[in-house]
Length: 585
Image (cartoon, rainbow, N blue to C red; front, side, top):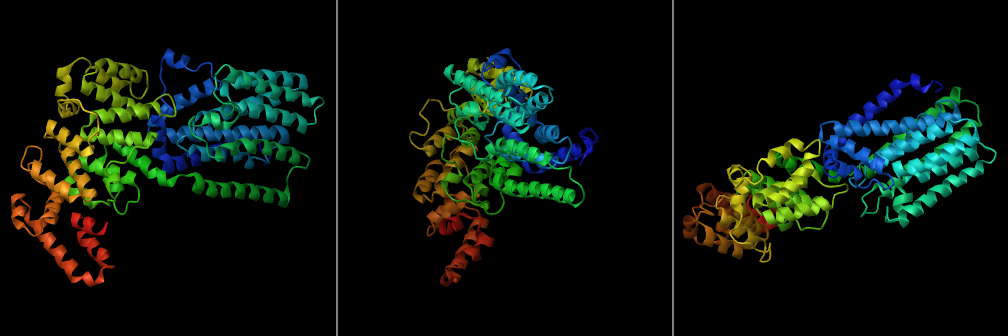
C-alpha cells in the first residue's frame, strides 16, 4: 500500500483494460448513439460559438473526443481513459493528505459513480472532462508550499476553472476550503473567499445571460441535457469526493495500516467497490434501452438481416416492432413475413411521435423507407435541433438527402458545408456535393433517383387524410415503391380492419401498384371471402396458402372445446399467419 504511484503503473493499466473490456462488451452501441448527438466541427464558427459560456473548454474537448466514438472500440477506449484518469487524480489528492497509498482502492469511488452516469444517453461527456480538470487543479494547488501562495493560486485557479470547466469550480472551491480546515491552517478560513468568488462569478454569468439558470452554473446539471432533469446518480461523484477528503484526514491521524488491519482495510475497500458496481450496473445500466441502441445502429448502417435476427421471438416493445417492419420493407418482404415476427398492433408499424429525439430518428428512417420525403425531412429536423449537443450528424445526412431529392440544392449545400467541417463525415459530404445543381446525377443515382421518383406530382399536407391515403398517393406516384402499398396493407391488417383492406385490394389488385398479392394479403383475402372460393381464384391465392387455411380451420374446429389452450396449440404451426393474429392477438 505504501508503494509510490509511479511504481504502480500496472495497477492503473489493469484498471483501464478492465474498464475498456467491460464498456466495449456492454456499451458498444451506446457509444455509437452518443456520437450522433455531439457534433464537433473543425471551423472557426464552431470555436467561436459559446466561447463565453463557462465550461466552454471542457465542452470543446469532450465533443472532440466524442467524434471518435464513431470508430469501433473508440468509445470504450476513450471513456476508459477518462475514468481511469479520474481514479488516478483522486488517488493523488488523497496521497497528498495521507502521504501513502492506503486509499488507492477507495479513491476509485468518483470514477465508479461517473461510470454510472456514462450509461445515461443524456449525460454529456464534458462532465467527466470537467471532473478531470477539477482534480488537476486540486493536485496543483495543494502541492504549493505556504498558505499565502496556495490562497493566491486558489483564487486564480478558481476563476480559470470556472471558464474552463464550469460548475466543478464550485466543488473545487469547497474542497480546497475543506483541505485548509482539515489541515487546521492558520487563517485557513480565508479560503471561504474562494467560495464567494465562485458565487459572484455565477451571479455574473446568469446576469449576463451566459447561463440561463443557477443550477447549470453551480451543480452537475450543467453537464446534462438542458431540457431534462438529471438522475440523482450525477450528484454522487460530487458528494463522494469531499467525503473521501474527510476520510483521508481521519486516517492521517492514525499510524500507517499494517498487519491484520491492513488486510481488513483493503478487503473492505474492495468489497465496497464491488458492491457498488454490482448495484450500479444493475440500476443504471439501462439494459432495456440497449437493444434499441443496437437496432438504431443496424438501421443506420443498413444491416437489415441483423435487425431481424435480433428480434426473433417475443417482442414487448413497439420500438422493436417498428425496426422489424422497416427492415422487412427494406428487404421487400413486409407482405410475406409480417406475421413471422411478434406483432402487437398498429403502433408497431409506425410508432406515434412523442417529440423525443430517439422517436424522431426512428420515424425519419421509417418515412424515408416508404418514400414519404416530407415526413422524413420533418422528423430529421426535429431530431437535429433536439440533440444534446450542437447537432445530430446522422439526421444532418438525412436532411442533405431529402433536400437533394426535392432539388432544394441551396439548403442541401448548407448542410453539406457543416458535414465537410467534421472528421467522420467529410468524405460522405464531398460525395454528396457532386449532386448539387445536377438533376441528371440525382435522377441517375440508385437511392436519390428512386426517392425523387417517389415524389407525388402534387403537394399535399402530410397525413391530413390519414397515413394510408398518403401511402396510396406514394404508391401511385411510383408503382415500383413496394414498401408504400405493403405498409398501407399492413396498417389494415394490424388494425384488423378487414373492410378497409377489402376496399384496398379491390381497388389496386391487378394494377401496377399491386400486380399480385403477397402471402399475408392472400391470407386476409381468405378471411374476408371465406365462403366464396371464387374470390380466392380471382386474387390468385396460392395452393400452399389454401392448404394452410384448411389445416388451420381443421385444428380450430377440432379443439374448439379447449378454447383456453387453443392459442398455444396453434402458435407453432400457424403463429406466423394473419388468421392467428386475427383470432388471438
